[in-house]
Amino acid sequence: MALSDDQIRSLVRALSITRELEIDCSECLDLVAEFAERELAGRPIPDALETVRHHLTRCGECLEEYEALFTALKRMQEQKENEDRPD
Amino acid sequence: MCAEPFPIECFNYSPSPPAAGYVAGGKEASRVRMNTADFEWPRRLAPDSPDREEALLELRLFMLKGVRAGLSRGPGTGDDFLEDVVQTAMIRILEHLDRFEGRSAFTTWAIAIALRVAFTELRRKHWNNVSLDELREKGAFLRGEVDSGPDPHESVARHSLIALMRQLIRTQLSPHQRDMLEAELNGMPHDEIAVQMRLTRNAVYKLGHDARKALRRALEAAGYGVEEVRTVLEGQEG
Image (cartoon, rainbow over all chains, first blue to last red; front, side, top):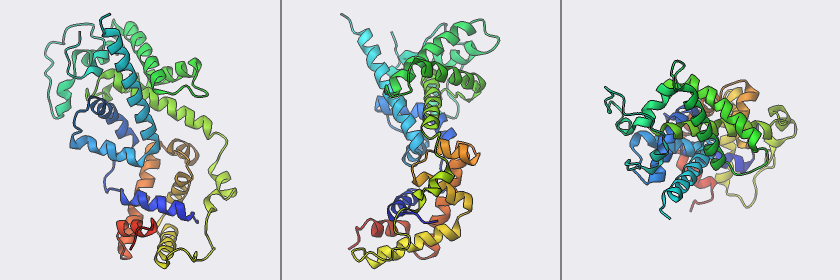
């Protein structure tokens, strides 16, 4: 096998953030709803949820899904605030 | 009016008073946040619940709203697609109600599942006609300077580290691990790699994780720290 130099660089970047223990995509899905709510509310992320942040730096698919979830929550929150606003 | 400090939880439907005997707390501090509505959803969705039909309808509408808000209106994301996504997500949610731990609003958890279903399907459609073998045959894995020798503008250190990385990839990884990394580095999503390698997405992630750990260890055994290698390869040395 032979990867391009750019691909080798990408791989080394991935190695540099590799941890001995990482959560997988199912574990990420179990936790990402809480992570998104906390991020949206600007609340601190506890140590247990830092594993989600790390997974999102490594997994493009989970990152894409998280970003969509965050967008959805934000839009729905804005919509709710608009509905609740007195005329 | 929602009295919760976190507005997102206001989206929850709260059909009845808190269940008697429910004590918030436990190991996970965040479980304390589980409000009445979150607690009620699994009960209302249970097969023997008299509220099941109503709860299913509410959850379906909620997921439709959430998935529509989360997806940009790209090709292939019309109403039929959204309905299919929500239908599939609903089945998964009903099968895995016990996985909801009250860490978040129930509806946020449900929308997260629905979005995973949606993106998995969109990726499957996008990569439908591209196989690992085709990528290999087209030489996508062989781009670059395989036998080109050192670039005169490239430092000797950089060139030798790239050669070392190629050697470690060849000697330290299993064929499965190499295939996975090749596909990933060529932009193929884990969902699609999983389909083509007949694995689960979790197994693909683990394969990649094990490969990365093996390469890290091999680099260290060869006397190199990963950060040092990264710095040199990205041209920041000196």
